[in-house]
Length: 248
Figure 1 (spheres, one colour):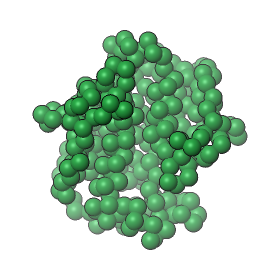
Figure 2 (cartoon, rainbow, N blue to C red):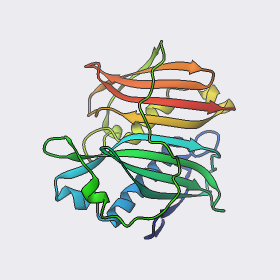
Figure 3 (cartoon, one colour):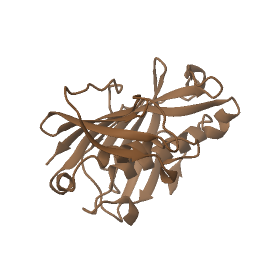
Figure 4 (cartoon, helix red, strand yellow):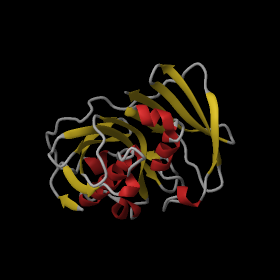
């Protein structure tokens, strides 16, 4: 992996066999993993990463993410992630991403909204003090708008239930965000992936899940090729919501 200390931060990854699907195309969940790793490394370089914040009893949580994919890359291809802090919207710290191939052609873009939490109270803290120290760079936003709330369809169908297990849990003892992306991806059929591709997804992370929790996954649709997916725990608390757009 190569890194660049300038903004936008850039990382290059080779797509491995375990990161693609049966179409030999990189999984959307793999792209989220690349983005999450790049964001973490850039935050460390800017001195507001995990090691810096833990001393202040603070930590970041990803609250919302919106991604658009124009072209899925194959196994063995190089995939480049560019990322940078975009600013602040109320309590959200915003971070954008560009996804490029080895020829520096943009194949996707994303925008994310993060919350800074106090580890004692688990309450949000204004991120201004941290982000105001970041050198300002005039970088065109990857996606202009801030990810908002996700509307729900009139009807939803229970499609599966999942019990949170060992491979779902991260170092913070709760479900990693990318696992929720996988839950969304698994709510669609083999046929859909064979005939179409996901062109856009927004996912909002609403509450945490821990080992042993049982999550019910519901799905609904708004119109052709536009779907809603949500996860609800045994206390009827919404864990995540997602809006997914497909194209042929």
